[in-house]
Structure formats: structure tokens, C-alpha cells
Amino acid sequence: MKRLLATATLLAAATHLGCAGAKPVAEQPVVAGGPATEVPMPAPSPAPAKLGGKLVTVPSPGLPLVVIRVAFQAGSVDDPKGKEGLTALTADLLAEGGTQELSSGELIEALFPMAADISVATDKEITVFSGTVHRDHAERYIGLLVAALTRPRWDPKELERLREDAVQSIEKGLRTSADEALGKAALDLVMWPKGHPYAHYTGGTVQGLKSLTLEDSKAQAARVFSQDRMLVGIGGAVDEAVVAALTSGLKALPATGAELVALPAPAAERSAMLVQKGAQSTAISMGYPWALKRGEPDFYPMMLAVSALGEHRQFNGRLMKELRVKRGLNYGDYAYVESFAQEGGTTYARLNVPRRQQSFSVWLRPVATENELFAIRAALHQIDRYRAEGMTQQELDSTRGFLEGYTLLWQQTPMRRLGYAMDDVLNGTPGFLEGFRKSLGAMTVEQVNAAIRRWIDPGALRMAVVTQDAEALKKAMEANTGSTIKYVAEKPDPEVLAEDQKFVGRPIGLKDRQLEVRPAEELFER
Image (tube, rainbow, N blue to C red):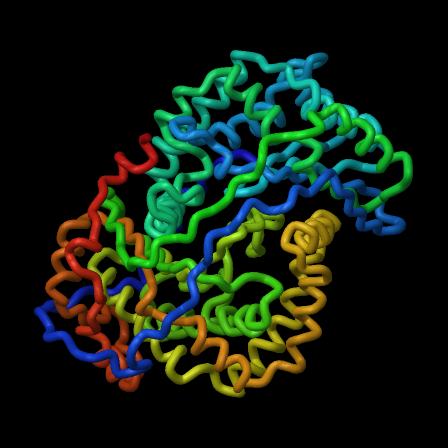
């Protein structure tokens, strides 16, 4: 999977709101929720155990397709300082740059008749090469995949092509036409401050990429794409010949790679980055690191709780109902129990992106600029209410029923079934998704609300806001300027208008030293 960035979502003109006269508002206590709780933060994370070339198989008898995923404990955390983007670029070069026998173009021509390709996706701690092929072509496809990984062409022209693509992805994509992706990447800079291996963008920095050489990529491949860092997955029409061909072929990789990276604890200080960009709308991302991870007692209850707050691109969440449906504020309002990346054109999470340190996040997409401060306060108000009041029995029953069906769709393809089986290994949580479904029926509203009180804290949220006037927003946040709105369409229910008044002057809680303004063109430069 190349680092392609989606263009910004268009604003729905019929739902935009106008801004009424805004005046400074005296600071007032937050009515719902009271003082902030102490959310447990991630502790320093030692280097994990190496995967050691484990094999996962998920056979689907009768299926005519073979699906393959080869995962390596290799990600942007392995990028040397000053060479940010090296792991992702090296992975792209392996997947697309040709083999010793075939040029890049010849490799594409060989894959085309099989209706197959070699995809690659790099995250903070993992890189996954994957592909789907008809079982009649499995032997030939595996031969090409193995050749790409073990006998790469190392063509200087391909390095230049892919490096330029990566640089353009930052300069012309991330910083120019992908406000939502820019906001999420900027939030990483806020949640994982300078020096933390999660802080820099997975795709690298402009100057880091420009400094890379073919020798750098060769050395990095030997360091991180090794058998002891590898997990192999095969699904669909699995047979002994397919397994033997793939596993024996991958033995040509280096047996041992570099030691894995330890992670420091993230900084506890709350902060915000306001990104100055000539955007037609505002992208708002909020979040904070937390110690909650898969396998812990509160994780299943919090999966349900965060889904009820804002499931990705679904309408069942409280944030979506309150901000979009009732107020017509924007397109989408979502919350996430762990780091989330969307899988292609689906609504589902990308798989095999394990992280030793996780985070809670909220995305507001996109917001009319005149309503950005109102949107921030509206979200904080709803999150604070959620922590203080919890969910109702009706919300729990509705969300439980939704998830009992929706989670089945998460595994509807052989590739995703294989991905979940590999996640069970990568995260050390056997039967994770099946366990979640079984747990749903036993969850009580008291249990879920207790978990919400332990883990949800609007006072801990850090922010990244991509906006056309960052200085004005900073001044408004510092002065606690009121943020009432003018509804350009028919006014909503009087109860909604009355609730608006509860948070028009809600303190954001960030001071000057915590509010950083950065031009978009400076981000991810070096």
C-alpha cells in the first residue's frame, strides 16, 4: 500500500453554521464531570520479544484464493535520526522496485495476468507485505513475492522514483491537500513529543528522505527485514505445497536482524498545536496516550463505550448525533479506543498495526472555520458529560446489538480473517475478536460506566487543529472568547439551543506556553 493521502472531504453546504458575535466569557467551572481524573499513562516499554518467524494459517476449504501476509517488526521506530522515512521507503523499494531477474515494469507485467500485486504498509512498529492470488497461480506468485523480498533489484532509478513519490506525498499531499491526515499526523507530534520514536511521521521527513541512499536501504533491509523479526500468515486455499513454498523461500532472508527498540514513557503535559494552512475548513484532532491496551480487563468495556461515543463513519455514536445530526456542525465525529488507520476504501480498521503504547483520540471532520472554537467546546462538553453521567441502559443495549452484527463484517474477507489471526499473535491476545463478541452479552451498564470514569478525561486531551487563521484561534482560546453560533438553516430543538449555552464559554484549559502555532509547510520538513 503506497503512502497515498486522501483529499480533504468536501463540506456539506446545507449543514454549515454561521458564527454569531463572539465576546470574551468569564471562566466558569465545567458543570458536568467536575475535576479531571488521573488517566494512567503508558510506562516505558522495553523491547518486545522477537517473533522468530512464526507461522499462522487460516484455511478456508473450498475457497479458490490464497491470501498471504508477511509481517516484520520493522517500522518508523527503526528509522535512524536524520533518515526519517528509511523503513517505509525501503519497504516500498522491495515491493515495487523489481527483482534481480525482473525490472519493476517486468514485475508488474508478470503479476498482471494473475490479477495480483504485492502491497506493503508500514506503521510505527510493523511493516506488512501482502497479496491475494488464485490458487492456480499461487506457486508463481509466491516465487515473485519471495524474489522481491530476498533478491531485490536495488535499482537506483527506482529509489529515485519512490523517494520523489514519498517527498511529494508530504509536500503536495499531506501538507497541501490532506487536511484531515495532516491533523492526525500533527496530533502524533503533540501526543508523542520530540525524541519519542512515535513522534515522527511514518512516511518520514522531506530532508530525511532526500538524504537517503541506496546503501542506506540495503543496510536497513538487512537490519529489519529478517527471519527473527518475521511473522508469516497464509489463508484461504492453504495446502502443504503453498506453505512449504513460502516458508522455505523466506529462509533466504537474513536470519538475525538488529535489536528491537525500547520506548520511553510519553510526556504527561497537555498541549495543542495550531497548524496554519490556507484551508477552506478546519480539521480537529484530539487525544492522549493511555495505558489501556488489548488484554486488560477494561479493554472490552471501553471498546463498547468508545463505540457508543463515536464509531468510525457510523451514526450510532453520541458525538455524531449531538454534533452532526442535531446541530449540522460537520461531516463526521468519531472516537477511537486505540490508534486507528482506515483500511483502504472500507470503514474498517487496518490490521496488523500493533503498538506497545496506545492512545485515545477524537476526530472532528471537517468544521467550518467560523465554528471551530464552538466545535472544540461542543466535543469537550459531550465527552465531559459522558465521563460524568456514563451511558444509559438503552445506549448500552443499542450499541451491544450494533457491535454484535458490525464486528462480523470486520472479518468478512479471507485477508481480514488472516489479519485478525495474526493480530492475536502480534498483540498476545488469542481469540481477541471472538472474545469481545462473547463478552458483550455479559457487560453491565455499571461495569462500562466504571471503566468510562477510569479512562475518559477531557481534561487530558491534547489537540491538533489545522486552520486558516491559527493566530486568531490561539488568541480566542487564550482569552476564552465565547463561541456561540448562528444557525443558517432552521433552528434546532429549543433543548439543543439551551444546551449550547452551557458550553459557549467553557474553558479550553490551555495557556500560552502550551499553545504552539506552526505553519503547515514547516511540518515534517526535517
